[in-house]
Amino acid sequence: MLCFVSALMPLISFAQKDNFGTQFSVEGTTKVNNHMNVGLTLEARTRDGLGDVERLSAGIDIDYKILPWLKASCGYTFIYDHNRRISHYKENDRDVLKGLAEVGDPKNRRIYWGVRHRTHLSLTATWKISHLKLSLRERWQYTYRPEQIVEGRYNYCYDKSDDAVHLYPSKTKNVLRSRLSADYKIKHFAGTPHLSAEIYNDWELSKIRCSAGMEWKLQKGHTLDTYYRYQHRNNGKADTHTICLEYKMKF
Image (cartoon, rainbow, N blue to C red; front, top):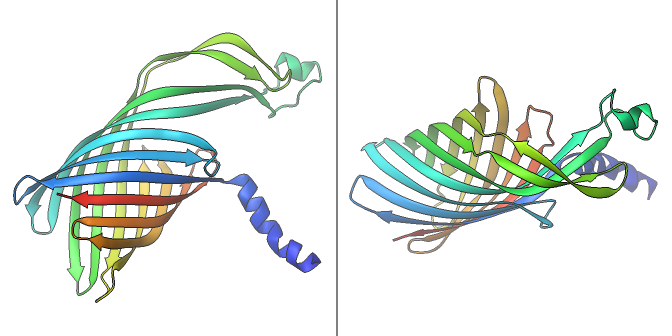
């Protein structure tokens, strides 16, 4: 028993440090002509397992095939975020000077829903080698968060809430996302395994995202993509592990 517990300790520590969540999405795509497709996606994400909804979103995307191996796309996504913002005690805070809290302890928490608007432009190149398909996507992504006033604040030291008002100013962000992915078609098998790795660059390497999974063909024009995604941030936030389910339809 002691050996079994000792073997589990790294996993327990790993689970306490990182965040686990899920992602569910439905995507519908229709063909406009031989070069253009239009798609609509609805998505929901959770954190802390299934315990807390983190984000709801709806997006539209337009693809245009420039060459047999090259396509361009643009899109817009409306994002409704469930924010959890936690501040931490600093050296000169009153409660630290009184000995009621220590530097680095959680101080105040604000929980609220907020809106973000996101647009993107992408170029994707694809190469096929027998049953293997490789693709490289370069995407510029712009996100705008409007100004928002939030009322209500919970204090950890006194274990109570108040009506303190805080203004979160508007914010914009530009990111270059570079993704390399690989799919492998298996003859007479309904599943297509796939791998991908993506880096986020906003004047520095801010995020790395890797995924592995299987896309299943259900019937003509209908597929179910199941995959695991790992995400590492360089801003000090916890790494995330996400189980994703995507239902895709083509009309």
